[in-house]
Amino acid sequence: MRIGVGTGFAGDRIEPAEILLEKGNLDYLVLECLAERTIALAQKRKLANNNLGYDPLLEKRMRSLLPKLANKKTRIISNMGAANPIAGAEKIISIAQELNINVKVAIVTGDDVLSKLTDNYDIWESGKKLGDYDEILSANAYIGAKALLDALKSDAQIIITGRVADPSLFVAPMIHEFGWSLDELDKIAQGTVVGHLLECAGQLTGGYFADPGIKDIEGMATLGFPFADIDSDGTAIFSKVEGTGGELSLATMKEQLLYEVLNPHAYYTPDIIADFSKVKFEYLKKDHIKVSGVSAVGKPETLKVSIGYNAGLIGEGEITYAGPNAVARAKFAGEIIRTRIGHLYSDFRVDLIGLNSAHRKEFRDTDPYEIRLRIAGKTNNPNYASLVGEEVEALYTNGPAGGGGARKNVVELVGIVSTFIDEQEVVLNTLFKECNSNETV
Image (cartoon, rainbow, N blue to C red; front, side, top):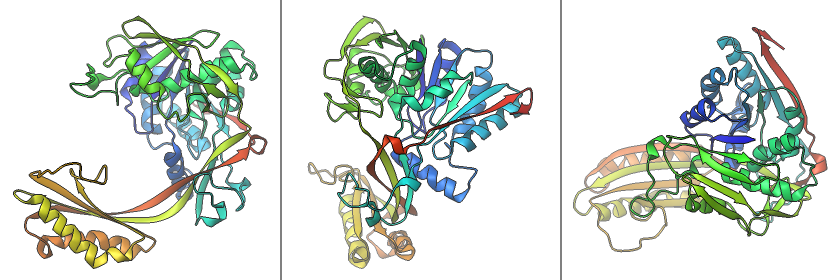
């Protein structure tokens, strides 16, 4: 069976998925679009409008992919449903009706566990209790491949979900196609490394890997996304559509293997605890790499829950200083603002973008010709949040010489923490919607 990946995150390009669907001869196209912060932001959109909460690019993606999906064997699996898979499916059906395309959509729900949590749940990162946090926005459990199996048994051509773990989106069709038992842990572990390698799409073919003059990658402007041909034991050969940019090499595969892996001897998903320490990569020919050698060390007893909470506001202001002595003038401007209002905020940042903003320290004496001053303050007070930008803008005439290009902004901050829930607490459901000759079922 052949699985391709058409997105590595919510904001990814659409073109590589189109190419995979048209030329990849795929059995499954996975669109992975959901992360911890993404799901919390989706919950905020759903709270504001009960018809929203799915991926903001779902409509654009489906308008492009639905016509190409017609008359093909390929099935799409995606977590673009985010906080509202049902509304996401209804949007897909409405687009299919408009385009006069027959399609059946399966909807998998159950990851939203907000109603099941109590204030006594322990927060993993801080050691606090859930009740110690202000306004909880969302709680979504990472559900696994099992959640998708009923949908895969149907004839739905699109399966849309919420917070299914990234590798599980790929493992589920392997379980379905090869008839694996959920207790065949070594096969599921091998399938998990395939999903883990595919899940970030262009990262595997040279995106993010590229470093000019050090790790050169050709064709970055037309980067192709990968697919894998998978055998019944889970071993796989990775490749990409011929003629697309980027590369699949031992180096790109090894780098992606390490992505988000804290312990290579115990990589956790809802399906498995996998041992990645003995992964074997074999170069077959240009852009063709075989992967094998993964085994299981057990199964998790609980599911991780990603919790979004209202973490206040960030007020921001930026202004540029250019020309001789630009850094000194920017530092002076920053100290003026800190003196005037810095004491009003629980967290207050003065960054010189291009000098110390990324690593929060200066590594050597530099004197760039231009510098961007950024000031940010965290607060729960809307007036204080607005004040940051107002003070920065006032530097035009109240600060050092030559400030220009000021901008200001206030952002609602969504915090993310985690807890764990017993798998038995999570109730999975599969629903269906169908567009058939302009008649929605």
